[in-house]
Image 1: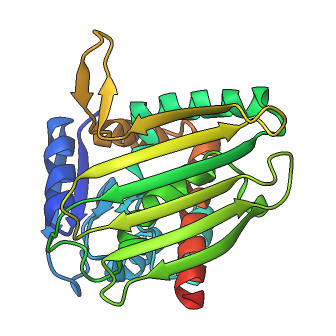
Image 2 (image 1 turned 180 degrees about the horizontal axis):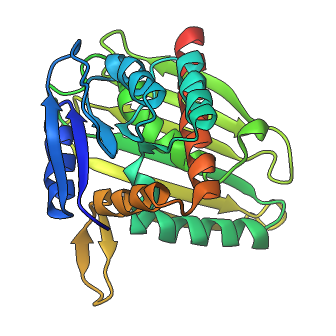
Length: 288
């Protein structure tokens, strides 16, 4: 990869993290915008949008219309209509747009996904339950949206990497009045995996730190149960030791592949999934 020039919008925790990692890969940030309302006018290879969620649509739309590829932090947008409009603009302009769902590049999740899908194939007719849990303490960042769009959208995206969106239905949704805690139930209503249920819980004023998924399989005939668990904060490395997981470098590699014209089919699927995750959360917020 040759030297690339970029613009950074938003220099909070995630903005600084993306900046330091990308600079280590040889990216030159020629302009940094830390407050909404300023629109750059320089020629760059791509833009990183890590500003508050309420500004994502405005900035991403601006760059796409200028023909500038965009890496934007999750959520893609605050509403389903805005999310799908950005998908449309990206396709129309033939400009890469990647959403920062870094957990999908997490080796702990990738291992879980392989194991889960294999069990799903082998245990036809089993009662299947998934439990997604994500909690951390209070932080000033991301206060412009509630915990559902801030945190739960991560896990909905992971769920949609297991099941087809068109077969999924929202069964229940709740978000606290403060917006700091949320619960949701999704069900697979159609297709070969109909009957699968998934429970989601997020809390951003918790006294524990956790990012985890649990899968439960119960044989309908025998009652035998099988469970397995993924700690998304830790994974077992090649030397069998536990390592803290930070998948940002992996998603940056994916973004650069798209900039080079590789992996476009997967890029389109990933973008659709990001919009679908917003659509599910937005539907829950409307119903809740």
